[in-house]
Length: 331
Image (cartoon, rainbow, N blue to C red):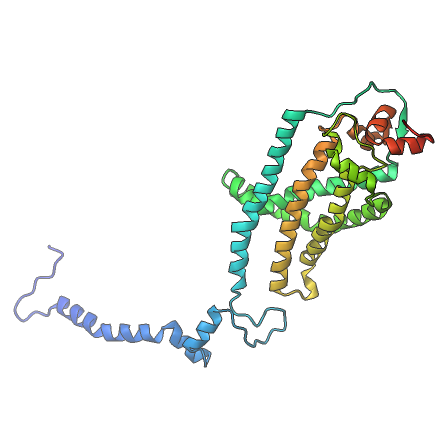
């Protein structure tokens, strides 16, 4: 039998009843939609939620709530979008340019100049340059600096080059680990930076010898290597970079690490910007320090590894310090 209903005279028409039911249900449906209107529900549940109220909310106007936590009176934080744009459109690209540009410049310098070699053969006689305490502080800070740098760069950039190639579970695990490592090692790094500053402050005040060292480009300009004391002008610049920029990184990082002291969201956003910018500057400068102390200068790494340098190296790079150690004046 055909599935369609066939009407006969005097027989009821089910399709007609169904049509009439649909027609009568239209007003009920419209009434139901009006009753479920979110704006009307908001007006009923929260008297005073007028169009002006929502306009204020979108603009980030504050109000009163039952919570006493910082920022709880802000319904929509419009500063968050401005912070995101600043981070993604200025800080991230600017940091990439600074880091990449520094690496390219160092590579070009190495290809053009090469490693600074010793002008004379090694003497075989060693002079203590860095004590065990000096080296302990240095490698402690250096190790934490590298770990914090890698995890910080992951937080800032890894979504662009790691997330597309890693499985979701691996990506999530790495980012969670990077965040926790960065947060927990930050205060330990701060202690090392303070110890380093206290330990080497007395050696890092500039003098006329440093000015002459800068005028000679640290030995690039002219034939003879410029004179230098225990630390040369370049090493002192790096030290004051740690003092000024490094302490900025440390202070801003501690504010972010301990939000339980009542910082507002605006404060956290401000210090996130300060922390990111200062960290990128310090990272870019560290590339130069690492290059000079390893690949760029023959014999420099030996001193920080063993604590001792050859007399030939001491005469060439820190002649005034060498003369002081040996108790005589050099020609």
